[in-house]
Length: 205
Image (cartoon, rainbow, N blue to C red; front, side, top):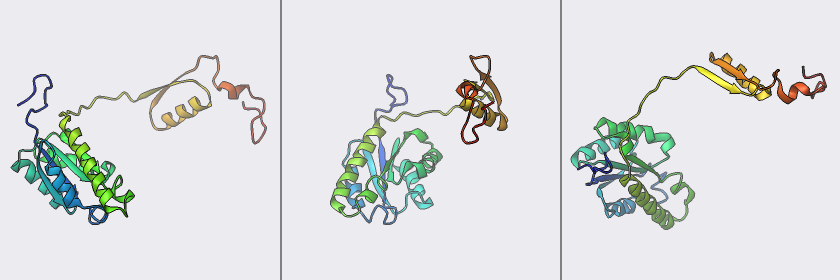
């Protein structure tokens, strides 16, 4: 049921947590199964799943299957950096009808396993906390709709000093209409007032 005060926010949260071993990148430094079991105990978590490679097709297919089977309305993937695979997982949940912004990602690889290579217990404990935080964030996610807006292919550059002139030239070379605004009667800024410039010691003009 939707909350009338917060449209799009369900009262009955059903969060799915997917813990990725990433081969040995994550599993080599922490106990992924222990993290998965811990995730099951968190409030609003309907299911917790361990994957070898969550980003691969079999892992994505598992996410889709569990979203349908458990009627999940939030998904948390605990794996590698969002920079690499956040678009992958957003597209994955969108394929089964879940708004892609109801997805949260926890970076267990770069932020945990790779920085705690030789302390398995500490890495596992930290991973549990990270997953707990990811689930807490997921509770507050709301569906978003992406919009596209027309862009005017023109730019306003304020200041006709060296930086403004160079920016204007670079933009113009890219095919963008440029409007250069300068408060003084001539462009060049401080540079135009110098009688010698390094390394040739020539007049700046």
